[in-house]
Image 1 (cartoon, rainbow, N blue to C red):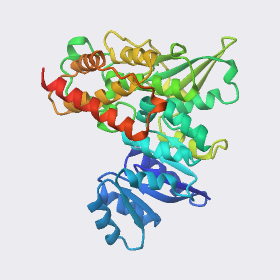
Image 2: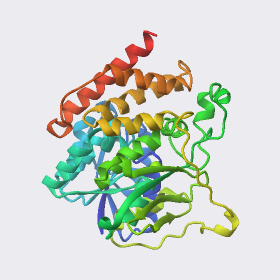
Image 3: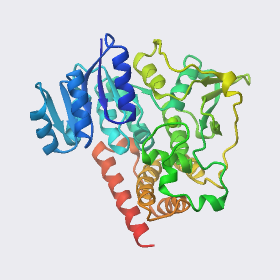
Length: 385
Ligand code: MG
């Protein structure tokens, strides 16, 4: 029986994980769950699985939740609550499905406490990859990627690291890949949050539409696989069937194919190196008929190039990009800036901000502080224009 803690239990990664636990009740038990403010759905999950440890964002929610449960549970709150859940002695695997910088907290403390971290949160790797790797080394924990492309690459690289020369991440291209510049200038938030192939939150759907998400994933791959960034390529692949490819030293290319369903990557992260059976709708290649691949158009979608530049510069530049992107996307979702202004503001922030520190020498609270600082700077910059 593997004891799991699911961070972001009410989100899409959380729901998929719960689904797997229901399929394999004799293999997994849920020791802890967290959510920010989705208290009612969290309570429902807690009651279904009688989860002993819970964490929410606000203290008042924690108190109310604890007294409303039909059984006795320990309900924590705030960043401290995330940390406690990550460090639970009985916990073996943490599923980090929180989006945003807060995912760094359970990932970091979990790795330091020697846990397996099934990591769906890309922000933590983008912002503080070297810090997480240091925590894993010192604490004995391990990161198993849940992001679909990285799970694919992880499976492809396994056992042949020395033979791999290049990594390829695929991108659906988002909903606007084939739009003209003129059409892009009229993209509204409602249009941008509808992703063609994956069900995801609003922020990541916008990132996917600008290709910023793929940019972050390049940085994520660089950190996860300790791979030089110019050996990590992106291919636009609208069908989202091939998730990753590796080119080997003799020129052979191996690819990972599956139906787009996050449960595959999650289950593999939980069971690795074993592979459990999973009945999803089968991959019917004859019905799909064709698989297409294109080079990304970085002129139309400059965010991808911005991410490559930032990856080359290293240091705190990826943190600046990630924090700035959060704010810029919020402004776009609120209808305050236009779709095509997203890369413009990101470039402006990157031009103006510079921190000299090395990520691995910072503490988690310092990282969060820098992140807040960049967010504030970005807000002020947009408002001043
Ligand atoms: Mg992905």
